[in-house]
Length: 81
Image (tube, rainbow, N blue to C red; front, top):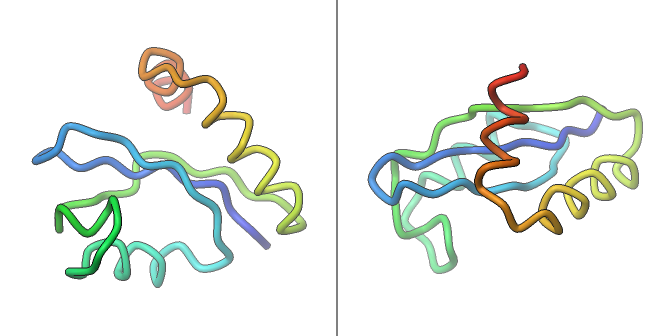
């Protein structure tokens, strides 16, 4: 299985949207000190996920949500879960 996921950082008050096949491992990597957007905080937590049978499907959904460019729509999606 592959997953679309949304994580949230309270310290940054920001969401991050991604896809992977192992959410716990990916979340650990997001919370480590590294270069890149999620490296700026270490308090990322999973707030939403969707499961897909293929990497392609999860990536398509990730791109769709990122194309919204709307915090309101992302929060609406999360609240429906």
